Image (cartoon, rainbow, N blue to C red; front, side, top):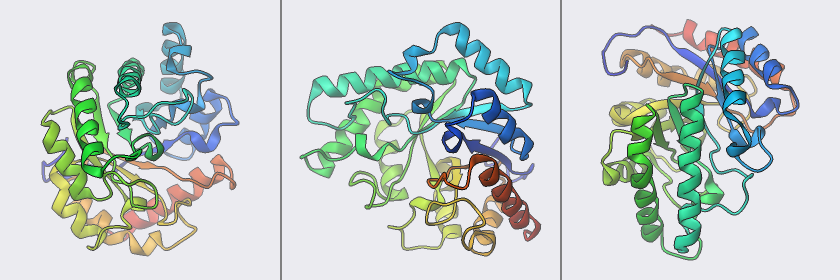
Length: 285
C-alpha cells in the first residue's frame, strides 16, 4: 500500500542487467543472498529477438526459479532496449509506432506472467523527438500509452513513465512533465516513478521533489547520482533526507537498485549497495 501514512519498511529490489553473464538462477541467487526481496528484469538480457522467444513453459520455470530463491519479480525496465531492433514509440511513422505498441502489449503479458506489477518506461533512444517537436512526441507518447492501458489494467500491471534528464532524452525530462503526461492519459494503469539519477534537470532538493510528486510515485530507482552502484559516491549522506521523506510519507512500494556501470560485478554491486541502503536506514528517525 501507499499513501497510508504508516511505514512498514522499505522493500528492496535489484535490476538484473549487471549480471547478464550469469544464468537466471544465479542472478536470482545473487540478489537473494545480498538481502533483496525482488528481481527487476530488463527483457533484453534474456532474449535474441524479443519476449516472444520465451515460451509459456519457460515463463513458468522463471517464476518458479524466482520463488525458489524467496524472491518475487517486481516488474520490468529497459522495455525497448534491443532486441528487438527498430522500435520507436514517438516516431512520426504510424507503422513504427504500431510496432512499438504491439511489443508493449507483449511486454505487459510477459510482466503479468511473472506476477510483475510495474513496467518502467525509460528507453530514451526509443522515445526521442525523432525530427518532430517535443509536443508532438509527447502526443504520440500519450496516445501509445492509452492504447495499452486497459490491457495493463487487466493484467494487474502499471506502466510507469520515467523522467529522464536532457542528456538522455529530449522527451519528458522532469517529474512535472511525467505527471503532465500521466494526467493526459488519465488511466489508473499509467502512472509515474522517481529515479534519483534522473533528477539533473530538477531545481529542488530530492526530498522536496518526493514530497511534491508523491501522489504519483509508484516506484523508486536508486543509484549514485552518476549511475554507479551505491557506495561509490555520497549516497549514504546525500540521500538520507529523501529516504526520510519516503518513510514519513509511508512509502511501502519498491526501491529498486539500477546501475549503469557493471564492471564491479553483480555480486559486489548487490552486496555493497545493500550495505549502503541499510546505512541510510540507520540514520532515519
